[in-house]
Image (cartoon, rainbow, N blue to C red; front, top):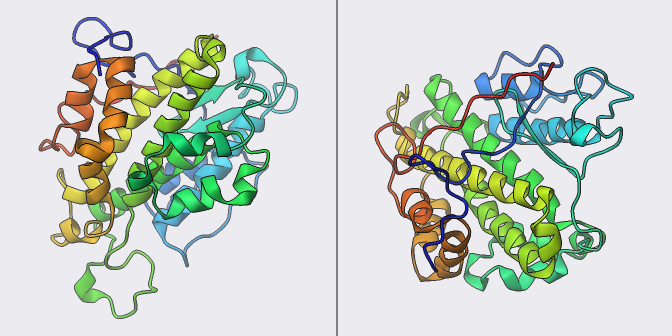
Length: 326
């Protein structure tokens, strides 16, 4: 791939620095008995939506599934139904967004349009290398139910929620609430012992980057539109977040309260997937990223190893939420 820098910013910036977040205010009192991520997600779910108790499934599932509900509230909120919180969502339109995503800390991302006839997963399949197709590929892409009237951009809803789930696992460990393996007598006990909390995030990174590549090739006019550029910039930011979260879960760098944390989320498939991104299986992805965002992005995000703060390759932390518009 070439070293084109169209997605980078000046002054040493990196693609994703200019993602267009909207501020999504607190909607209700969230659950405060789990961890900071579960509290964040549940407090930003519309008050009109049911909040389920996922204690039997654990905090990874809890954060993931409730984040879907928060995403849905953002996507479907209408200015005429829920003023003033959603007044400026969806480019000010009174109607549902194509995509609404909650990415923690009061930040929402919305996409008002996607190609109208890009409503099947089937054309996406060739864009995902066979070696990068794991169990969730069958569930969300090749499953006949997924291929019927499902827009590929909806995979971003899953990607975001898997990253939130990984962040919930890390938060639970750091709060000293995740029970280490030696204290587990029943593998079905939630928040106990080893779990694949990091796998879904890095797995879906491949599927969503492939989605962008598919849309850019099949729908160049839409990809060059404001919404197409907006999705590309969000992808750059969220891929950075994915590598940072995956590395943090696998290495437990940063402040942790559990000496066993390095064994809790490793040993599944995430390490293999990270190696694939950096090896021969990920060559197609690195070429795409270099073409879109420059070689420096690949070097700093994909090829870098975790630093001592639990981040990825010196990439700056995500920007703070934007101020609410007047």
